[in-house]
Image (cartoon, rainbow, N blue to C red; front, side, top):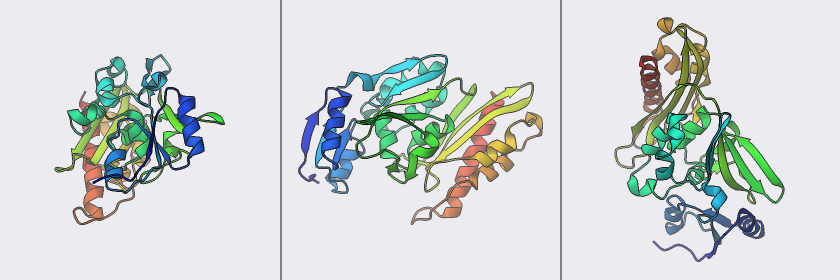
Length: 282
């Protein structure tokens, strides 16, 4: 498995990386490489130029404030999982710790996961549930893309050819009760159904519900029907199974040789119910 020939540039700044992307429409950004390089070896991807961004300082930024958590695009999973961000966003660090294995977590990056847009990516559910903003740079300047608009199709994002993801912003505060639960494929470790769930409970009432699912559907999705059924209702009166069933209907599912559309929808429902029950019991 040998990739097609390509050029290589190690960029020192965001401007230098964007210059290459602007000059070559077939160029690709290289960070951890765990998604791109295997595709290149199989010749499913044939970029003419790789732009290595791992040495750009601003892409490795981690910042926390009262109104936003900022994670640079080149921050590696292992670094994030051991950071103080767990104090304010345990959902994010829980999800990161369930990604693949230690070798992948020490090389894979947050921005790489977002840009690759695998519909079974663990972080996809987190991005959607937290209403994350993807900050991208181009010769035209900076723009922020909401998570709800980021995923266009499997492996396709709203990122333009001359744009580069520089950081992900998570608005604060988020609901206090947070969890990420995952039913992993027994061979690959990818999510067959991963659920990012958040909510607040105030005086026995459920508030600020957020639910997102990855892996089960053809695309990661926000389970807004479940959120609407739960928000503002007394905890003692809700049936999480009913809400999860409604939320599962928000996704679009595919059948393959291993798992049917019905199985995938049911699994999404089960994992949402488990996540909600876990948060309610905290």
